[in-house]
Image 1 (cartoon, one colour):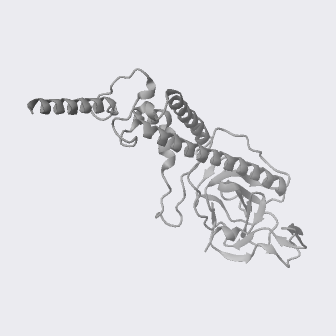
Image 2: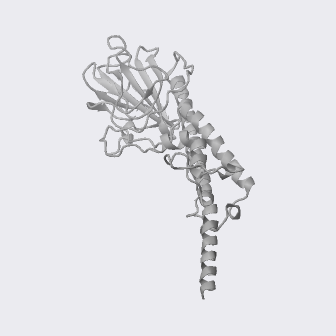
Image 3: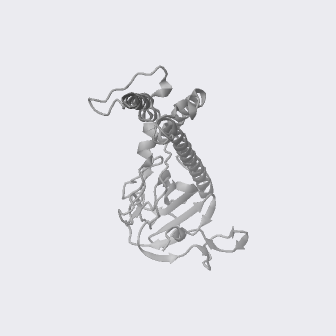
Length: 321
């Protein structure tokens, strides 16, 4: 009987020692008592060290969501200010200006989509590595890492995470964001004196809109307010143009998320210093100008136009309720 008990104890001790030898070693930053067990190959480093080394700059800063309860003026994280980009100083026509702004918005949207895809692929790769390195997720302490993934696949995942992190950091440096855009706000509060769409006013030009011809069409919303009233950005974006057009109107154009472009016309361009310039990043609520009486107009008001993927839309449709 005594020999049987000794045999059982010896078996239990052997199982325990085997489990300890297969468990994940403590990370080096777990405190003064944590010891990192040296390994023959880098593929066996703890998951925490592996992932943080490869992708900490990409995962941590971009994963924080926008504050949901900060009020109606809350805005998502701003875009990083990219390296100096050469923006045209002037445009001969409004059409050329908007075409250029749409190209900027389209490139911006493509970069954002690439960053989101990179982060999704990185999450998948990290989840696969967790199943290898975390014994709680791999179905028992006695299962070896090699039972779940061979060295070639493991090295490929590590390389993918590192490459995606480097690409993601460059996209962020160039202004890409992964946090969804917030809800738009009005650029100012005032009297709506002319809505978007067909109009009887003879001074509005003819336009073909969504396949229908209109002899007179207003391509934005007019909001009448006192001269000098601040005009605020309705959403996050990059200023594409801030200056004076050929008709004398002070104009600001912004490229926003999701292929959206907005224009603000008849701004004051002499008394108030221009608060933004081409290439600046703005958040919802940032001042982009002041209402003036510039260009072809009969009174102080803001002319506000919006395009989505090259198509004119009603600006007020962006505000919701």
